[in-house]
Length: 435
Length: 141
Image (cartoon, rainbow over all chains, first blue to last red; front, side, top):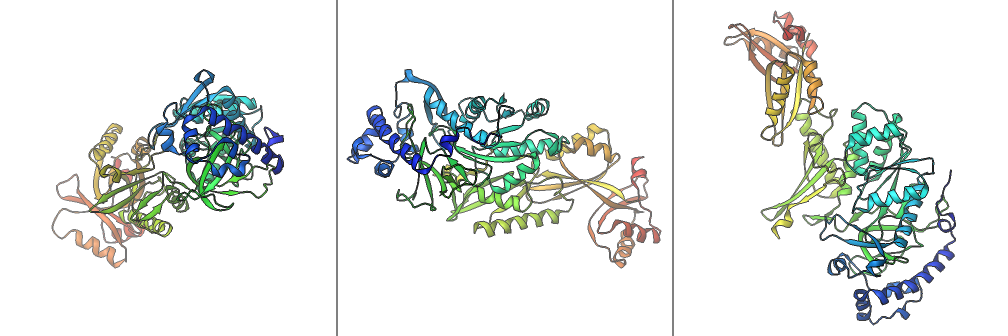
């Protein structure tokens, strides 16, 4: 089986990767200085000129970009080339504020699809495979990214887009899909629906899944792997940097290899902006080394991660990032305690519940209320009121142990929690309405 | 001999009970007895229907349903009739989780539905006392 899509660079010695990065950063900073007045001003404010950046060591001198800059510069302020050189835009859902619109030249698309193709091959893809892409198509990078990757690898591509689960299952069974790409919550949903229709995990031909675009836990991986009978691979990316494929998992499933020949990575202290030593937990920051149309330097992702530079047994030499442990956007402060939805999900899976939940935070008489709604399965339901109330209390106590504060748990009927077939609505924070 | 009760999990919201009852009506099955237990967020609708299997297959996809064996004991519809039934169960150390009653076909008869920890023993105890109990077969008539 083909293990790498671009073996030379994916397994290049560290010195060579560093050499490539050093060459590229000098060229890229010059490109941004010449073509993006917005960033040039930020550099000038720090008294920097392109000559100050001679290697990746100097990147830490450069100013950060954040979501606020993307908002200020919307829509064309961070464009690095003439629009006539661009061939596409992609955009974010805009759930955390104003939409991000990213531009791509053909070269940008090619490098993005190369990165995503590396992920697909790492999950075992060859031209023999049938790849069912059920990420949303359109402005969202998920569908476009995996679609392009599947073409590059030469797989038979099923451009399903998200939703219409009946049709997904019909195509999966009739055409013998071997690799599925979607959000982990949709993969879990497809698994549930297959079971409801009486299919066993071995009834489908799937061997692997590439899941990303939302946080998920190791426990959720185990449950998806079991329900679909596959190996589940994580993929990481963001529209601002390109899309899915900025980093991806290999067969070791122990962290995601960052495509460092295209994206330089740093971990910083989210409060001070200081670069942290390897192994520290902090905010992930990317510098695009090749992008022409949307060449972000030192972009703050808000994702909290740890980098792992120890060699990986898969043979890839690129640094690995942990699953994001939370997003500073997602992190809730409830009664003064930091709470990440991923922690709640881990508890639910440990306690034998499906990861179908919704967190509702509100404020009553100056105190935060914290409610977690959890869907119950048919085999958990009992005719005894006391039994259900004991289950609620049990979950409350497990959550209190994990989080340090206790939510009120409400067990609800299956499929009653708002579940968009793309991204699940996990958090409703009504406190924001009062600001 | 015990009879089959269906329990439906319903959210405590307007229209939920109506939906469930409407769906049962469509199956043509008759509700012979019912009770509702309520908590803050949800309720449990417990029903005895004339055709359990049909209701289960029609509603199983849409509602959380569990099947429980319960005892339906026949008693006289008069003051003091329930006491000897409970007394007999108590002497056999059988615990009642919940119960509800309905009056029967004839003017003189009533039934009490008992959810106990051991339905089989409960029936034996009651039969020994001369108390008649219903079966799924008699209910289906």
